Amino acid sequence: MDAAAYCRAIETYLCRKNDGHLIRVVGPSFEIVSRWERQGVPLKIAYAGIDRHFERYYRSGPRRRPVKIDFCDADVLDVFEEWRRALGVPAESHPTSPDESRIPNPGSRSRSLPAHLERALTRLSSARASGALGDAFDALIDRVAAEVDASRSTASGVRGESRRALVARLAVLDADLLRAARDLLDDPARAALSREADEELAAFRASMAADAFARAREAAIDRLVRERFGLPTIQY
Image (cartoon, rainbow, N blue to C red):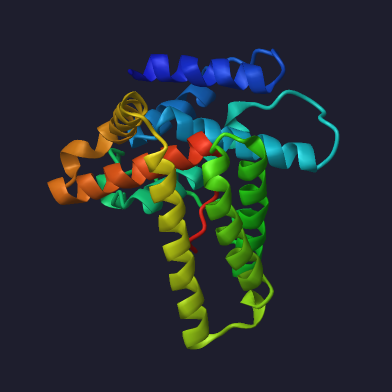
C-alpha cells in the first residue's frame, strides 16, 4: 500500500468514527498520516490509536465537533510504540528520516499492576460472556479469572521477590490462555492470521534478523488471536 492509499484508508476510517462527517486528510494532515506510513505503522494499529483518542474524547463530555486526524497523532504513535515493544520490533528498524522524531504523548501513562489486573479481569468476564470461545474454554477462563482476582487483592502491597513471582505467574497464565485459544483455530483461520501478521510486519522484515523476525511474527499472531477472541493480556 502506497502513501496515498494508506491516507485514503485512514480518511475512510476517520469518517466512520465521525459518524459519517468527512474530514479530508490533506495538507498538514496528509503529512502526518504519510509519516505513519513511512514509519511502518500498520493500518490496524493506526485505527486502534484513533479509537483510543475517540474514547478519551467521549469521556471528556458531549461531542462538540468532528475530530481531525491531527489530534490522533500522539495516540497512534503511542499504540504503535506499544505494538512495537510487544512484538520485539527494534526502534532502529523504523524506516523514518532523521527529522521525524518521536514526540511523547504527555497523557500516556503506564498502567499500575492493580489497574492492569482489574482490566484483565473485566475483559476475561467479557470474553466468557461472548461465547466466542465455546463451553470447553469456560473452565480455563474461570481458573485464570480466579487467580487474577486473588492477585488483584494483594497486588498493591507486593514488593520485591513476591512481586516478581506474581508477574512470573501472570506470564504463565497468559501463555495458557493463548495456547488454548490457538488450539481452537482451524487450519484456514491459522493461515489467515499468519498472513495478517506478515502484512503487519512487512515494513520491518528486511531490517530484522531471521530469528528476531520469527519471534516478532509469533507475537503478532498472538496479538491477533487475542483480538479474535477478545482475550486480555494477562502478563504484566
